[in-house]
Length: 220
Ligand SMILES: NC(=O)c1ccc[n+]([C@@H]2O[C@H](COP(=O)([O-])OP(=O)(O)OC[C@H]3O[C@@H](n4cnc5c(N)ncnc54)[C@H](OP(=O)(O)O)[C@@H]3O)[C@@H](O)[C@H]2O)c1
Image 1 (cartoon, rainbow, N blue to C red):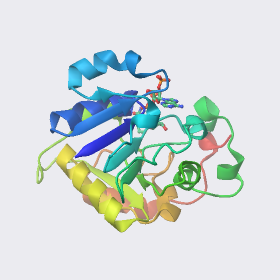
Image 2: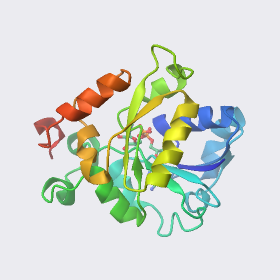
Image 3: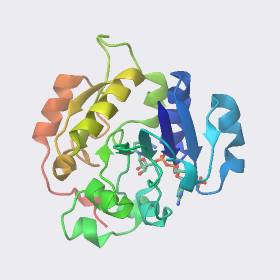
Image 4: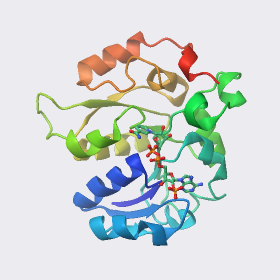
């Protein structure tokens, strides 16, 4: 599958490693330009590109940059993606440590992914946001393994969600349908499922037990 990854840090780098190992055709971009991604490209066989080129022809695009960087992404970022492409949003809002206060998220009660999809001008599928980057490399397991982890996946586009869930299964994790983007507060930072390393049943339970109020540590 053709996959574009925008952001080559902890999450983007490890997704590049695993997705290329599985035989996918990966283009990867960061903010500083493809020449700074030579090492990752040599290690993985991914094609380093400018952010504007990352989505070209891709059936899946992963946007994995700090939340505050989303508005800085080039306009038309996803224009060249394949028809019906699934856009994965791994983002989290860390107002105190990284992102600064974003009024639209805190005051208007919008989910982080709803804010991101508005900036991208494209629906997103929220996945990996509560997954430790290192687990992408170290904790994948074959289907049916008793210690296989499950990841919540939220989104409004059912076909795109299915594509993403199948890809995550291929990456070695189970998934739980966490509902629509409007419900995705259930997997945001500070919720019971955030960072949870458990299987499907525990992930379902944690999603059910979430409460909508944003915890103080995650308010700006
Ligand atoms: N780290 C984790 O374990 C983890 C787990 C789950 C979710 N997340 C979330 O996933 C997102 C990414 O996290 P991360 O830890 O992978 O971040 P990170 O290590 O800081 O890497 C961020 C990447 O985004 C790139 N970037 C920043 N601004 C950009 C722009 N305008 N255009 C193109 N690329 C840009 C950076 O490129 P340059 O280096 O060239 O600036 C870098 O490659 C965050 O929202 C984070 O909260 C992280």
